[in-house]
Length: 423
Image (cartoon, rainbow, N blue to C red; front, side):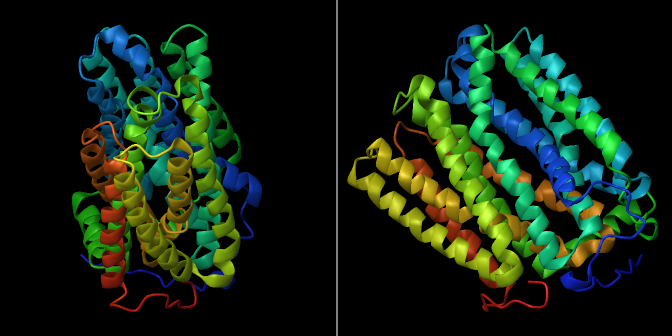
């Protein structure tokens, strides 16, 4: 089976269709960001509740609480394989609304969990539901934009998406103050309801009629083969997955590093977490403005190189202080690295999807699945290596950053910083 891919015009020629009846640019970005934010808040606002959940279910090993993050990501990763092909057949709108219904079911099951194992199962269902927002946000952006314009939209979207972790633990803390960790899931339900109403009211169907594809294993496999044959798509997705592993390892370890296991910040944990996330949001805003002028490759290549070098510095500082550097120094280096990673991740995402416009839904599905599973696996290994020091996080940043850089060099056949019309 052969799939013809219509050439994507240069970014400066890409304009919204005159028939477009949806929201303007700012509102479009806000809706897409909220779709992605469901994923972020569902991870991060639960972190302050770990001690309460540990006490409620008598969890003997604190490292086991990290499973609440990683099983969510496993469900989130595998479900992405389904949403893209289905949305390429019936459209983006019905698939997103169905995925939100699954997400709400997962929230409800978590709220009535009688055991830790039940709660883990509910988190898997939550992840399955949240995957729809991840896949369809990227596919909808690709439906509307290409090239540097797409990269700019994705950067603005990621900026809002990355602001969520700044406030998510604080929201979780406020929910705990109301009396129970169950209220954390109430906040997730509110967010899902808001997204459902806003998306249903304002976002029309974005799938181009000529890109609708039959829902069949043969057609899906043909699209996946086309994706796998793209050196750019698979290379940048692999690099993105490795960097995602850094983020997931940090998120999984953050509560222990900042609160119960190392720095013992207690109620100040959300503040420390938010400061680091703020660096990511700032960098993403800068990237969104700079990418149109400098290009995706220039910014992302420079970002991953600098990220790896600062990762090595992070390891050196950790060793110099026997794994327990002063909190201010550790936060400064960590924030710098999160700042730098934000020049790589949004652009890697856009570069990977750029050649696959005709199969954006299926491609976003497969690449999202691959990125998430690779990131979750790396993150799990990092989190489980927590030993009461900051060294596992630092070593992982240096190692995975270096691997990501090598993959990018392979993808570009050894020629970094070269940008075409769109890159």
